[in-house]
Image (tube, rainbow, N blue to C red; front, side, top):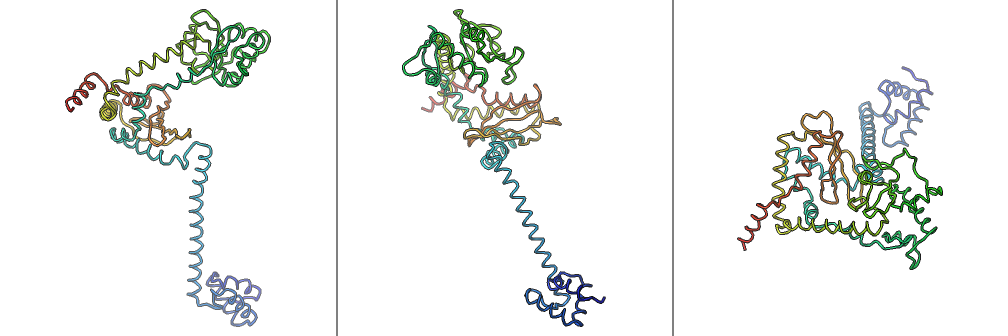
Length: 423
């Protein structure tokens, strides 16, 4: 094939790089032998590109071409690896900032959770128990959480229209200046109006004397919800406000009221919901405080056998009992066949980890298990798609197995007798 000079010079850059085809190379070399101008042009290009000779043999050009293609493939491979590494890092960085999903600080808890669930799947229940934070379970059994009682005892007394109310220190600081701890008339109405409006923004959590509430309503100072509108909390609906009475006949309007109060129409201090209120009458405050003290005394009585038993003896007995209960449940209901990481949510120094579960005979997951981790693992319940399915039954059995009473009389006295004999 005979080439024109224009075509030959178009092919020269490919030729000196060793990238043109065999046919083009042969035709070009024939032209270069006959054309002094093109030959000089080729030599100049070759001088600028020291890696390629002006007129390389066919074998060398082919080798250079293959080396060039290998370099191209390596660069593509490195680029692909970079992308494969960068994308997960970007995704994990976003998850880290948002505080949910797979990210850098929950990798270890997730791996530990996978190991824990793998042991449950393999029915290695004692080994799975060892991965749980049994110290926290022990603390739940032996140490009373006095936060609610401490918070209630921090309330301060104020007088509003002649009635003593107990308010949180924050509420007193916000609404009572200096040494003033009493409100009457319009000042009292303005206070209850503010409490109501602030509660509406925060979820309709309020308790207001009936007379003050009705006066504010008559004056159009309450932006109440529509009569058919409801505020939702979990699976229970709450109406905007309910008229209730305490044990001495004093009437109050309560927002976000417990359904039990709605039915009974009276306040006797037995509902835990009232512990969340920023202001309550002194009578109810006293009742709540006494209830908590009774609860603390009952808890400490139940904790005494565990404390006598000691942590090590309790843990050994609890571990064996947990494995026994879970083995029996598995025999009756089937085992975990697979599990899958669902999501993670960041807390204050801890992670909430959620996994979907499948059991023998399940075609789809019936729900999942929730684990918490601040270093160790803690069982936190789970979610179910239907009551009574295997996931639901498993979660109930698992929770019961962890907190079964290992301080039965026989075990308790048997342990104490053994210790006394050892002494």
